[in-house]
Image (cartoon, rainbow, N blue to C red; front, side):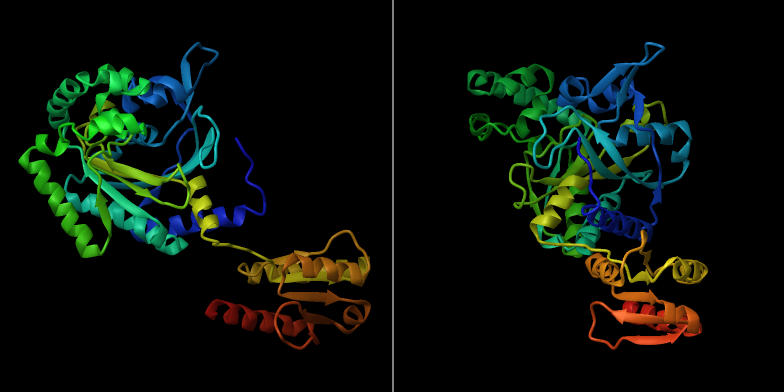
Length: 417
């Protein structure tokens, strides 16, 4: 669990702003969900025999001896809220953002407290919903400048009935090669055999080369819908790779599953993952409701942006320097009025006194575009001095009354740049 320091937060804020703008443009609304929920909520939705439930959840008994868990992912809580508040009566487009918790071995791109952007859509069963979710991802990647560094991997894992038929065939095949499987895969052979397809063991992957393919067990309707989706992606110009071994780590997925991966982060290559979960609303006591969504790992997204040398800085526009206590007091009501009139202009007031020389050093270090100076002469004459700190421009002293016009011009220039 790590701190996100002031020099890092501009990158996070840029991601959050981009997500808000992109999702709003598609008609998605924000939902804010509890961090702590009943343990049963996650065990029912994620799957009793997944790594998350078996090994990674932060679970504890509260004062009523009820089992509670810090949320390891967001979809379960979102579906619970949709059912509880009867939100699935019409198609719903929702998103949320915040911390998740898993007890994993900390490493680059994988932390015990991490952050996700989650996007969930309810009420649309057709492939156009899947296509829209993937299009949203690409719009976000473009907005953040990482589009060329991410690859879409996609698969069709069929319905529950499809997977049941395939499960029997896969278990029959793998049982013949049990001794060649890694220890985790041997354990999963009885509990969750489809997860073996996602094994990172080279020996297990070699065995899987001869395994029956899931695609051979999908019904005609499921395969037809998937082809329609791929046609939509082709129309959008979205590049993709068909990955028949992609199954995702959560039990609730069906039909379309996808991941956005990158070669810039080493082993932690998955930045975003999602798919359909058409039975989950019914599992939680709601009416049968088709649903689909995805989650973005924000730590991995920041690492990718850093790997691509994408930087975001938010220096102040004005750094205010005052000669003494009288000049400071003189500046207060003027700056208060400017902040109300120009909320998009960042104005930092120097505090703690000091010489002009030391204040100008602070102003330059702040990265501000202009120093706004109230010296003794300026206060006496009702003026203010504007000294450029970055651009090639002339220092000027103007009447206080003209400062608003100067800032209006400055803001117009900045917005058109």
